[in-house]
Amino acid sequence: MAKAAKKLLKDYSGPVLPVVHLEDFDQETLAKLAYQYARAYQQIDGHWYEIVAQKYGKKVARDLDKEVWLKNIPPTAIRTLEAMGHKKKDMAGILKVTQLHPAAGGCPHLYDYEVELASPTKGIVKVPRCRPMRYWRDKGDMDFVRVMCREWDIPGFGITGTSLIPEVKCRPLVIPPYDAPYTRKEEGYDCIWEYSLEPKKGKKAAKKPAKKKN
Image (cartoon, rainbow, N blue to C red; front, side, top):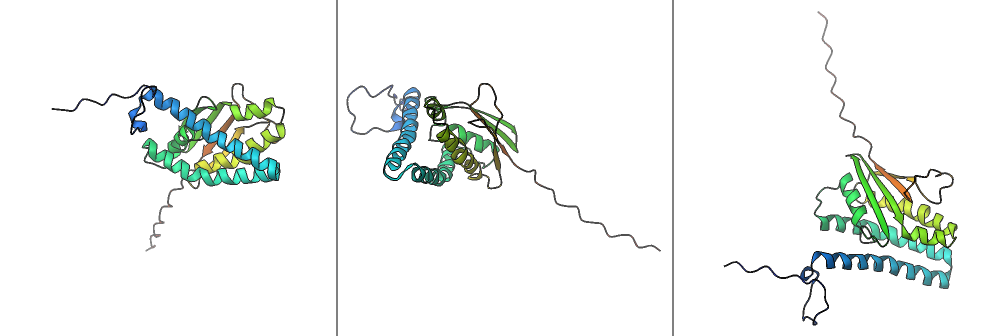
């Protein structure tokens, strides 16, 4: 006789269980937990940055924060891809990793993402809302917005792609603070990114030997 399916917990408001795992909760609760984990992921970075800036100055904090994120992205991208069950390191994989990376991908509290697989060699990532950027923009610190979006995000988005496909190119199509050399704006989006691959060149056909004249 088949065992009855295990009843999943809708929350953890009941008694303390001797052992509990994420697999014990239903989908809604898991989503809520994932959102909080994503917020914590970003928040610990914010706290770390503030403390380093207070002790050693903003320049040191900015340089170290960038270094930490760029070191963190590649292994995180690979693990995220594996967790999703996407087997190929391709353009679709890059877009999926962007949507669901632990640093708030898929978390409505921090970012919104729209992606388009235009072709096997081209992917577009649109960000209708970037809460961290808006936070600093609304504080009037456009200098930090420029650091975040250009000094950090350009290499950050880039290394997300190259973690999966080393030869992929990434460039911002729309990026704050919307001044030179990136002056383009698009209504409804805080930033837009393009991943692209050069089409692979086919092997040249071998030349046929010239026929000898009689």
